[in-house]
Image 1 (cartoon, each protein chain N blue to C red):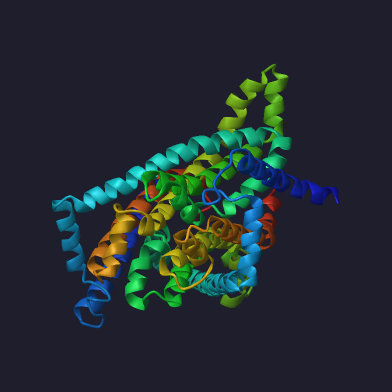
Image 2 (cartoon, rainbow over the protein chains, first blue to last red):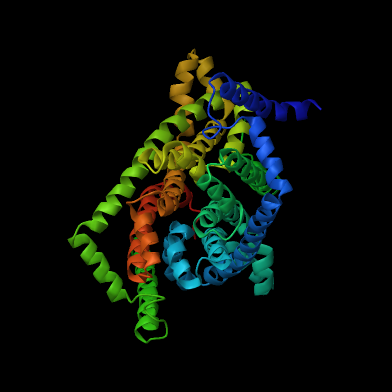
Amino acid sequence: MIGFARAVAPFAAFVTLWAIVVAVFHVPQDVMPSPNAVAVAFGDAIRKGVLTVYTGETIRRILLAASSGALIGVAAGFFVALNDVVADIALPVIRFFQSLSGIAWLPLFIVWFGFSDKTIVVAVWYTLFFPVLFNTVVGVKTVPRVYRNAILTLGGDWRRMVFDVLLPGAIPYIVGGIRIGAAFGWRVLIAAEIVIGAGGLGYFIFKAEAFHLTARIVAGMLTIGTLWYLTDFFVLRPLEEATIERWGLVHR
Amino acid sequence: MGTRPPLARAKQLRGVLGFVLLFAIWQGITSSGLVKPIALATPEAVFSVIVAGIADHSLLINTGVSLERLILSVIVAGLLGIALGVAVGLSRRFGSFVEPLAAFFNAISGIVWLPLAITWFGLTWKMLLFVIANSVFFIIFFNTLLGIRTVPRVYEQAVFTLGASRWRSILDVIVPGALPGIISGLRLGLGFGWRALIAAELVGATQGLGFMIYSAAQYLRTDVILAGIIVIGVIAFTLDALLLGPLERATVERWGVYQ
């Protein structure tokens, strides 16, 4: 109970401060709506079904892109990393594509697929795929050669080598890749939804801007924040804790 | 280390070969007619767009405008992020209050603010600064914080035992110890900032590389789009390599983790 109170306290204090500032300085509603107005806009958008439909769209897109991007990224990463020559040839190119955000490709994807759902998913997929691929290659290459030789000497075949030696050894790097890929991918998703206008929470907040529905913008932002916070808290942070913190790098 | 240079050279040559292969594939599929120029411009067409853009300065101006926005945002966000990171890292109580809020705002950092920022500032440079600095700030803040928390307590206690003041312990132990975290925060910040910048420029600017490629999409000019993508990519790659390279050499390669 105390833990819960402590977790909620900063947010309660923040909302109180926000309400006081808006009330005391008479901030116009279209500049910064009061928490109350945002709650009303939130309820309104849910009752009309817009918010629920758009949230569903956004979740569907991130799940689709993240699951396929991570799976194919890890598989392709092993394919590249297992041969030294292939890895040397491919790694700089992969690093180039990783540095280049999916959002920069968006105009080209628009030419290819139009202002459609496909354009959004492809841009997010791209953004997730390359960090996972890159980190998998680096992770596999950091597993000492001796370990590979050891399992081969013990009579293990390549399958044992991949699943018992290389995969466990590369996991911290793969997790890092997924984490950064998800962070970039989530932002690209919202950005692409703003630009493309084929539904989703990005579209929801950008459309609200056109009608100066500031309370609706803030309600949409809070929904986006909550979704990402939950993903981070229940999926990404436990993953990280299982790797970095277990190695005892955090002291305080 | 004596055997390193020839090996490293072979590695570099293979790396160059990767880009040559990529270029050859691109040339092959476009000039053979497998992919139409309206879907993917030929390397020659893209090259001539770049040359023309340099000759009439339009490409240089768009690049300069984008870089200027990035640098300004990273300076503003960096100063604020490091300052708040150090403050929160030093005080547990302050941290337990600020951290959950920062984590939440981190979740909506950057492009999510675009509609609200447009409402507040219109389509101005202030709007872009707000959106980009916003996306850079949190990554620098959290990395500074992590950097400070990885400084072992013993080191701090050691200087205290030697009679140092709180201020000395911050300047001589905590901040230098947190430097790797701060540097990786700045590096990631540049990457996040550059991505947010391109995204914000797509819809919220009338100049810059993001604007250039998005307006080209409306005329189906894949040559201009690809020229923009290459410039954006080269800058992102350089930002990454410039800061990542030395860092990696100092840590991963020195510890001999690489095979």
